[in-house]
Image (cartoon, rainbow, N blue to C red):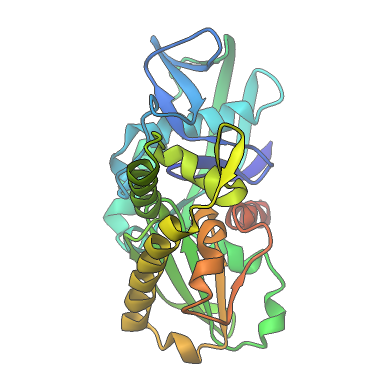
Length: 300
């Protein structure tokens, strides 16, 4: 038996037992692919390229790719041919979690039927999930850090993902309000890819942007200075994020503003211009799912 948290992200799927893989899926199978077979259908998994399909609907209860990545994450986490999970915790954006009907539809989508025939890379796997719990995305991150340091003051947690910006306000170590905006980092990456391609003449794809921001842009082995291309675009998006936040929160007077998520890592240095006291959490990409794992263990 085991307990696990699963973050079914648009770009990456993560689990609390240190499994992380790209969420892209394709029906085109190559021998080099990781293959998930569900009944008589096969899917190429762990793809991060322009041939992959991604979950681009923030209403996760309506997307079949979500279930495939969920099954794959559970199957990959087994040590043998059978996986029995006492407690599984999965997140929904706060705006959806507040709707009881949406939560129930999401649970129905993720149900692993007894007669489901599953193989991962040719190995049959039988999955059992005794209890599936749905929590608001990014809320668990708060309880995975040393929250006692905040002395029960207000804390605004910002989870910047691929499609959404989750905002959770804590006081006295409890959630008192939360929202979700469709202000994910993929919009930034799309604009950057188009602008770099236009200005340099080299075909840059959206999935290249994270690496470019981290390591730089190279042509024929030589790093190119493209700060004058990327900085105005990122600043424009960060200003939009800041304006949206100010509509809901007195963000300048909230003592602690914490940032997490893959998008948070990518944009932190730019968001600081608008929110100087924002803090990027350690392990920002995985801290939320680690919190889910802690919650799942506590349920056991």
